[in-house]
Amino acid sequence: QVQLVESGGDSVQAGGSLRLSCAASRVTYSNYQMAWFRQAPGKEREGVAYIYIYSGSFGTVYADSVKGRFTISRDNAKSTMYLQMNSLKPEDTAMYYCATKTGLGGGLSPVAYTYWGQGTQVTVSA
Image (cartoon, rainbow, N blue to C red; front, side):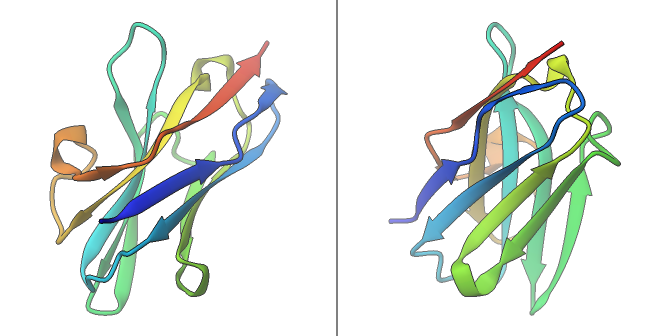
């Protein structure tokens, strides 16, 4: 059973930065995607960014709302995915979740992902 554990959430002021981490265990398949999602109170869960690994190479995709501000990365040696968030805005306030799936496809659609972490809270004040 794949396990994902997020950390790094905090309260910051607008313009600040945070780095979220997602420690993954038992991810043994070679082609997969890992993604960050977020969900604000009263809103639907939305995709933030994902990284796909295929035949040893990888790529990244970002939601328009975070392009140029957020960077997704993965450290294979540590089995950990990161989300570096810069120039944070109050509208970035949400619970942030990491997720993964076998194989490729599905983009930033939450229903495409099989395994989820419990989330880490990010609060950005004006």
